[in-house]
Length: 362
Figure 1: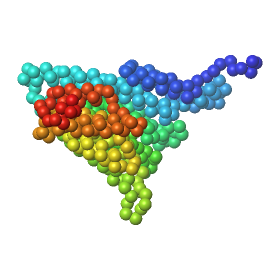
Figure 2 (figure 1 turned 30 degrees about the vertical axis):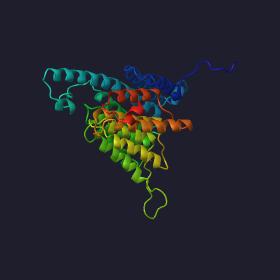
Figure 3 (figure 1 turned 45 degrees about the vertical axis):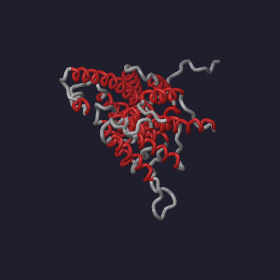
Figure 4 (figure 1 turned 90 degrees about the vertical axis):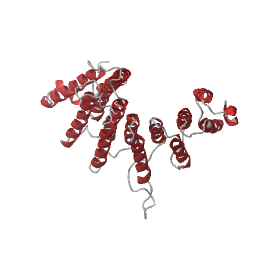
């Protein structure tokens, strides 16, 4: 056709599609550099368009402007790299600590609190990359403050960073959950001027960070945030509806709190069971297959640790929950994973209990 374009120029959306493709490579640490190269290229095109906006030859450049999605994906790229480095760093530190303990050069308490494992001059734990992601969020806020129309500090941007902190959290990084909490509080404060009030993803990220830290107060902090979400959504006296925009907990919130109790040195299976009962009694959230699986595994873990003091009783509780899960499967709601049956049988075989009920379970 005579009116067909002689050339096709990229737009912001074109660049963002490429950035999105890069950030889907969740196990490739080199994507951070590739993403930043494209972002800087977009910024250079934008600068040239502003400087030469009156020339027809540069008109296409007016369609290439980094926006909120661009910078959020750049944050995600750095977080991917941070997570990869953090996982490798953790494995190396745990292996090193285990060797030192075997040689009697490291006390158990020193290893558990991370005091020997987190040296300040160690650049391989993902902290530096996460700081880059944080600086991009700050840059977004600065651009919004000067009136950049296409850039906004959104809930998605904050959640991207919170998810990054949750990804870096582990038993050797007790500082991470505190940083995540600080960011969550910043979201709440900033929401007075911007639409950045945290949603359920925001709270779940903080709860996940505490659960992965595996500290003595981890489960308690998870419970704090869960109860805050619940209590803030209860109608105040004189009101028929909630008076706060705070998010209600979902099934993932409860499951993350269950994880926190299960990951404690002395896991509290009874509390995990209570959380399941709370969901069943709730009008807003219902347990799923994962919820039941966590309760079952918590009781099996309890059996091996013999925390109730009655051998075999925890296996019976695990079986009761599995039996309930199978009855729900018949209704088409949820269903058990095949490995749950194997786990119960193995735990029953290892248990010192000899009651008739335990034999019936086996």
